[in-house]
Structure formats: C-alpha cells, structure tokens
Image (cartoon, rainbow, N blue to C red; front, side, top):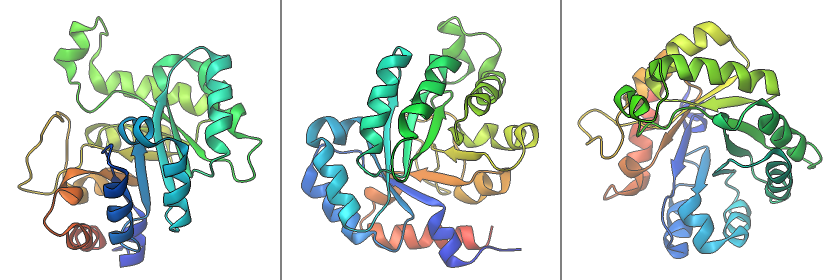
Length: 238
C-alpha cells in the first residue's frame, strides 16, 4: 500500500551541509513541512556550534546531528550526553568504534528528557569495495555493514546509517524495529557527485530504508521546496 504524502515527508532528512548559518536557516525555513528532519553535520556544527542546533529546533524542525562520534568510550559518552541536552532527535556515532563505545553513546543520551536515537554509521557511501580493500578491510561493504549493524543493535543503538545498496539484505537479516537511514540518495538523472553506493528515493524505500538523507538534489535545486515536494510525491507512490 502506498504511503501518504505526510508519511513520505517524514521519511526525508535534508542535509544542510554548509558553514553559512544564514543559508542553513533560510533553507530550514523554506523546507518546513516538506521534510521530516534537518541534518546538521560537521561543517555546519564546527562553523556555527550548538546555537545553530537550537535555532533550527526553535523553527519546529527536528535536528539530526551528524557528528559521527568516534573516540574512547568515556569521551563519546560525555559528548553524547552534551549533544542530547541540545534536544536533537538523532545522533550519529561510528560503528567501527566498537561495542563498548556504542554502549557508551547510548548511556550518554539516556539521561536526556527526550533521548535522541543513536545511529551507528557503518560504511560511508563514499567508499566502495575497492576502497575498503585499500584500507585493509576485507569482505566488501555488504558484509561489513551487516556485521557492524549486528554489533550496533546489540549495543542498544536505535538504527544504523548504511547505503541503500545494503538496505534490503540488512532489513532481511536484522528485522523490523531498527532504523535504516540511507544517504547516497539521488533522484533519477542526478549526478552521483562524491557518492559511490547510491540509489533513487523510491528504490531505497522499496529496499527497506526508513529515512532518506538527501542533500544536494534538494539544497542545490533552483527551488529547494519544490524539489523536496517532488521527492515526497515519488515516495508516496513507492
């Protein structure tokens, strides 16, 4: 059964990857009601800090804070606790930090009034099997994603970030009740850019993705609001 337009909108996270605070706020305002979440990553956070997170939250848009924390467990726990106090909806950590670090992140957010979902980033969508081999990581992306997702679930994370190419197999192996968040989303005809493992919005949803992270196809469009609406319309028919 096709999802409603409102359900489709909630599936979309727009990645506002810029250091320009004014641009982040402008886009966030333009996309109110057209996306479910705003993703603020390293570029925006290092330029503008926690105040930007608070400002976007005050617009009524849930924030997906994508800092990909990766450090010793004690440091990650403290950083996750601080991030949770900002009222973010989702927070990322690197799955490769290991089970103890992932558990520390989950423990760090637990004291917040509304704890964010901790998402473990598996294999970056800018990497493919050849790149992993060069890094000395055998077995390819699909095998690594599945292994790290199992560790993340065991550690208490609420989901993982993976490419849409691994979504179907991962959903089959890990079951329901565990979020699959997929970057590397490109509507048909869009350039891949620096992403290697990509898919269209509809195919990612069909494969089992819960939330789609979409950046340049929306933010670089002549009319970002219209671009987001078009993607939601595509999803509502998926």
